[in-house]
Image 1 (cartoon, rainbow, N blue to C red):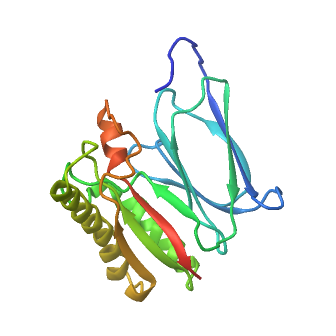
Image 2 (image 1 turned 60 degrees about the vertical axis):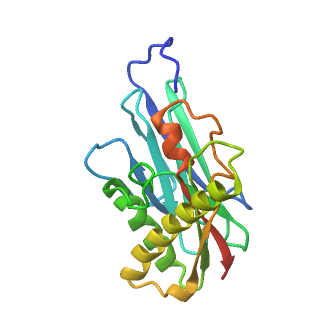
Image 3 (image 1 turned 60 degrees about the horizontal axis):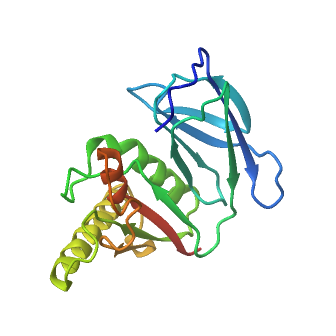
Length: 214
């Protein structure tokens, strides 16, 4: 969470989209969550832009461009007059991963929370923009470390069902299931091994994608 010791009346964010290899600016579709509480703002073919932020909110910037890995970053802005969000888009290759924090679930359940729909729509757009890409959808669970074998199996099954729920959404919207593989990590790779907030608990139940073919 940000410190509130520094007062900033009018904070801005500058978004720069670059090619990871060439470092040059490039146009891409940029989505911003957090500016408008009711909808995701979409900027088509954007490379460099600056706009005002509402202070002390959490934001997600995500980017889609054909031939490049899906990008998503959830963050609190820096305590500065301008928060710089430099996005380096990586050409698609096997092994690349992206964490999608905005796909969330109802508590310890496997049902996708309705507020995840914008992130699911973005993932669908990425898959459709790259029709030869094959993905592993990897689910994670929150749970105490050092669980016994039986409990570990429960966490793995729950996390795999979460991955399958994401795959079901994509398949229902026309994606070939043969391109998608579900994996469950259980609680073996928690982002916050000792979560202290609801946000950290949610982050432990995250979903990520990994390119396994293209």
